[in-house]
Length: 570
Image (cartoon, rainbow, N blue to C red; front, side, top):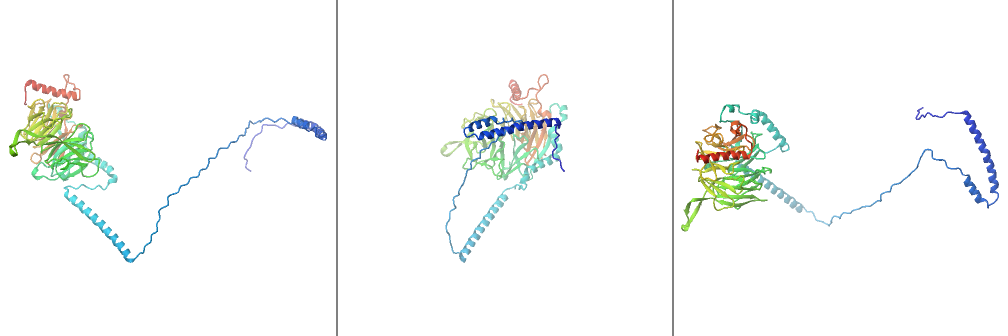
C-alpha cells in the first residue's frame, strides 16, 4: 500500500448533535408530505389556476446559496491567424531540339582541337616561366620567397625576440646607459656604438642616403648605389628597424643606383626616391611587390641627369621636389594613376654666358646637388650647386634667385635649414669645410675646417646649436656652438680610416641616437653621451625652459654676439 495523501481533520463526532439533527429532518419531512397532497388537489381544479400555481411555485423556490470558496470561472479564446498562401514560379529554361550524327572523323577532329589547345596553354606557361627566370637573372639580388605567409607575423615577432635576447647588452645600453665619465670632462663627449646594420648582398654598394621615419622613430630607410660614376651598376632600397638589426624589414632591388630618398612625415608609408638614371619613383610600403607605385618616364618629365635630392613638402599634400644635374628643379604631384610634373625653377649660372649659333648668347645651366625647404615659409627654399654656390629661391619666382651665396670651392653636398631659427642654415662640401649662414648676410657666420672631405652634415632635433658631420677619414664630428664656437666637442673614429669612408649621417627625431652610413653598404648606430645633449643653464644653474622659443633665443644670442664683435669667420 502506498499512501499518497493524508489530511488530519479538525471535526469531532457529537452524538447529541446527531440526534437533534435527525429530529429536525423528520419534522421537515411531514410538512412536505402535506404540501404534496395540497398541490395534487389544486392541479385537478383546472386550467384557470395554472398561472397562480406557477407563481406559487416560483415563490416557493429556495434561494441560491452563496459561493463559499469565492470561485469564479472565466474562459477566453484567442483569435487564430488567417492563413495566407504564397507561391512562386520560375521561368522555364529555354529548350531547343538538337540532333547530330557522330562520325569517326568528327570525334577525331574534336580530340585534335582539344590537344592543340592544351599544347598552347603549356607553351604559354613555359614562356611565362622563362620570362620570370630572365627577370630574376637580370636582378642583381633576388628577394627570398616567403613560404610562411600563414605565420609571417608570428615569425617576425619571434625573430625580434631572438635578436633582442642575442643583443641584450646593446638593447640595455640603448635604453639605460649613460656615460658617467662625462661628469669629469668639462666640454667633451663620446659616442657609444650600438647596432650595426649590414645586408650581405649590399656589401659592394655605398650608402647614398639615410632617412628616419617620423611616425615610427625606430624605422629608417637606406639608399644604396655608387659614387664611382665610372662603375655604375644596380642599386637597392632597404628599410631597417632598431628592433631587428640582422635583416631588413623591406628590400627593393632597383635597376639603377639610388642617390636620394625621403619619407613623408604624415604618410609614413610613402617614400620618394631619386636614381642615377634621372628617374623619380614613389614606393608604397603598404602594397606588396617590388615595383614602385609611381615612376617618372621620358614622356612624364624624367630628368636627363642624376637626381641628387628629393624633398617632400612640409604640409600634408602629396607633393615633392627633385633637384638634378640637368639644372631643373621639378615639382611632382601624385595623382590617381601618375606623377604630374611642373618645372619650378631652371638653375642658371649668372656669371657665365656661352656664344650660341648666329652669335646669340646662351645662358649656361647649373647643376643642382642639394636642396631644402624652409620650416615656416613654404615658398622659400635653398638649392646647392655643383659650382659651389647656394641659391635662395622662391616658388613664386621661377626665373630668378632671391639671393646667391658664394659658399664653397667645390660642389655643395648638403644644405639644411636650422629646425628652430628661421634665418640660419648650414652647408658642407668636399672642400673640407662646414659653414653656417644667416640668410640676410652673404658672408658665413661660422666656418669649420675638418681636414678631410665632408660627406654630410645634419642639425640635431633637440637643440638649435648642435650639429654633426662625417668625413671620408672615418671620423664623426659633433659641434655645440653654445659650448665651443671654435672646435668640435667630439671627434670619434667609427670605421677604419684606410678601408672605409663615411658618407652620410642622420639624427633620430626622438632618441639620442645617430646613424652613420659608409661606402661598404653598412649603417652604424651611435648613442650620444650626456655632454653632447646638454641643456643650456640659466643664471642660477637651473635648466632653461625647453621648447622652440628657448632654442631660438639661444641661437639669436649667439648671432648677436658675433655681429657685435664684427666676426664673420671663426
